[in-house]
Length: 233
Image (cartoon, rainbow, N blue to C red; front, side, top):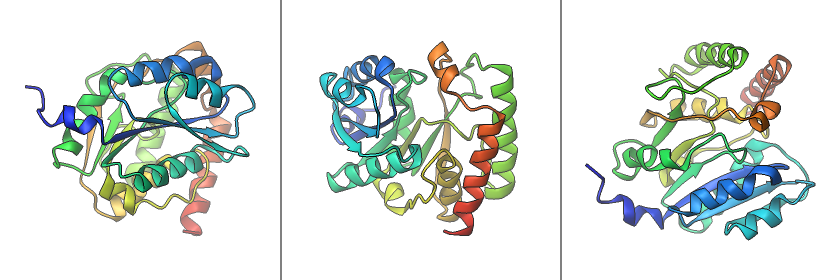
């Protein structure tokens, strides 16, 4: 049964799209989002292509970093932007075409209803994503690491599709500017004892998203960034 509170929640939900040199995909991503979700902000993280212009042309609000700082920093900018403008729920959504706007209502429902503080998208639940083998191995390793370090019983870690209540975002303090922010968010969900749930989502692995994906060396760098963020928090 559809949640009757969802139509009213659309206007107070901010979709935060961090983007760095995503001119090739961003227009389609924003247009698909705005078909049902009117409030979208692109955080242009120092792009050297037409990312900002394309985001504006597609109907999103755009905030630009003067230099590339990393996805964690872009999300923190988006969170501050949403809190300052009265957002009641915030969603993080990647700019590379991997995520589907069709997943948003199911992702947001437990947050809008007040059952949880955070809903985390998982590509490993009932919706099956065509995940490259090496990527799956890295992601599964990250799940084990996160369960050990945070205690959260989750099935997916570095999934950029999340829905958060305003109260949850107010408690987040991201120090990792780059990709380690994903683990940092999970740590802070655990340390603040936020109520959370995983929701099945579909992740599309296009040629573009595969080219931008993390390899083993990138994963090692993420681990180092994450450990440094924990030490200096």
